[in-house]
Length: 353
Image (cartoon, rainbow, N blue to C red; front, side, top):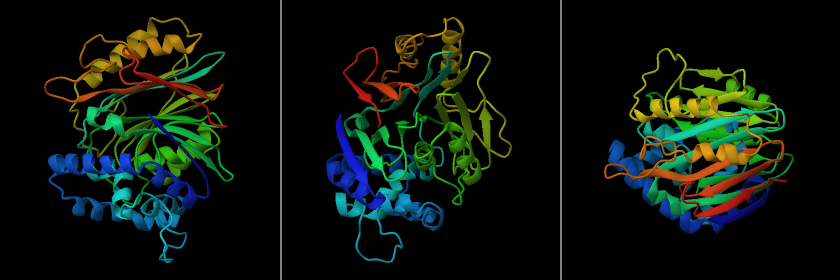
């Protein structure tokens, strides 16, 4: 997996990222152009047009992300400073990648299993990220040093500025896709919501930011720091918290577990219900973990194969576990296994500082 180091202002970070990941970004654009056309019948021009509907909100309330993706601070200067200049791709295409969940209106069927566990000695946050095998070659390890904000390390699809990982304050985030209709262009797109969490100094600060901003579409964000974890089930209409149980655990997969009035959910992955029960059974039957090995072992679970916690492709689906991550948030360290964790193709470490 390619490691990319970026530092400086948002515009400088975007330029460095775009230059270093130009090949992977191009492949990611080709992948999503094809996927969105097959799922929604949208042309890429239509996709970009939809993405630009978020621009007024982002310009007003999140200009640093617009700068990082593409343009100068006032969006009037004709010189392009971010991804467009760095990677050579149009601003609207890179924006579309960063709001691809909202454009798809809950059409994607990626499946993931996530877990946080606060013990007396450590706060763990972990996830298997399951998605189309074709995207495996386009994952990057992104390291960002920002001005007056925490440093960040994430594993991301090339072109996205927010994804799964942690920051130098010990704040970590994971993401579960949820298939439900509805999008609000006056709220923060979910991948940019992940970035907002990683720009925060604590779980509580990140939670308040998302409550105030709202999240534009359906997803579950599992957020944790050294004090423990909280689940945020998001829709275009609301945000509902899931608190730790009496053992300090929060678990989630790819369906809502709380009531969300006025939201139409389509549970397209019946194994999501099974995987949630399975990770619940594994944690309930487990002693309190004393190391990451106990958490990592749960993510290797193949009960119910191939649509297990450690997921494998089938004749009908190319979705499989592309990476597995276990974060130790007191230590500000994450261990990432590339590929299915039972195979262990490669291991990398995230340690923002």
